Amino acid sequence: MIDNEKWLQVKGDPAIRQLVFQQSRVESIFDRRIDGLNEIINELMCNRGVYSVRIHYSSNQLTCWTLENPYSYDVHVGEGVFDPDFVEEFGISKSNFPTKIPSDAVMPILEELKGFRFLDDTIYLRNASINRVNGMISLTFSCDGSHYISYEEFYSTSIILKE
Image (tube, rainbow, N blue to C red; front, side):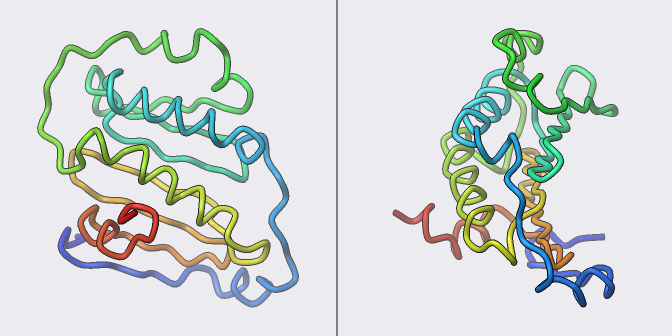
């Protein structure tokens, strides 16, 4: 069990770590359209009942958990996320639910994730998740290292969020 007050780092597959400097980030659809992607995710998380998302930048997958069906998730892939009707499929959420991550922090978190994605062509963010209910953010990098961090800790160590 993860203690929401601590930053947990997990080293992944040694084979991936061993070859990390022989690879580089390949631009994905999500990379090319990251600002629009961030706007979509912000809308989903702040107004459409999505309380948790997992963003797979390299493989162009967006996994969403909603208040309407909290025990299941939906996977959305590639250009379909940018379809003009995509966000409308979720409807407007009229539910108030307890969150540890405030609505006005979602976009700055997404901007910080964008920074991690483009920080370096060798060590880069592969996927990330934001869960507004439990206040946790997870990050998995190209070296297969994963981090699980509370929103408060993420905020306190962030460069972008503090600006």
